[in-house]
Image (cartoon, rainbow, N blue to C red; front, side, top):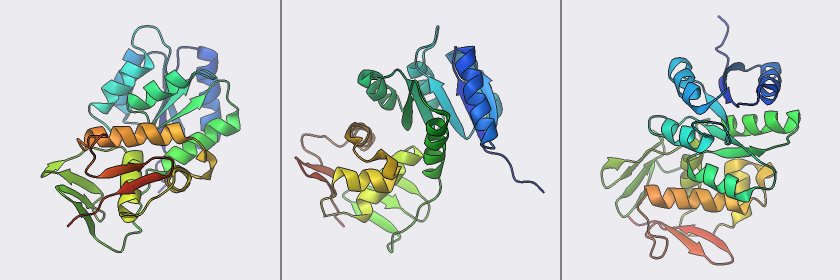
Length: 232
């Protein structure tokens, strides 16, 4: 019986870019469904339940930020935002909206395929800890079940957020530098993209109710890196 193809929802109001991305991803072996605006993207998402979403930011009507936020209300599926060249604000806002990654226009077909592979790779279960769980104050990370609890309440994390948090937990009480985290969580092709790490650290802190000025879990070591605090 043939295995199920990984499905990708591609959303862009530019039909030429939409068809180009669809063609590239189909050549890579993915099943591709498309939408031309945010509203129709939500409808297609509900109907198709894709494994990944490739989402343009600037679209008429519901833009990519809003569509991303709406998807995040009920799903942690990986989302890649398509941003304008050199627009750092778009990148940060896209990550803040809940995206896992971004690809910048104009991009090559190889770059697009590589970004999709990298994000999907991060969704694979990752368990390298000799310990079954991590405890810090009222935070519990259950590595076996890939779940996070805070004050007895489940914390919903994206695949990337979970990989980041679990990597920090596995290296608790030691300082890890940004490039170490980027290489392990995102891949070596992301070395140097410190803003990507900073935005995801900020997102994790919000979800963990961790005050950046007086953190309990993730400490910033200025000019060096980050430390995850372990406490039984």
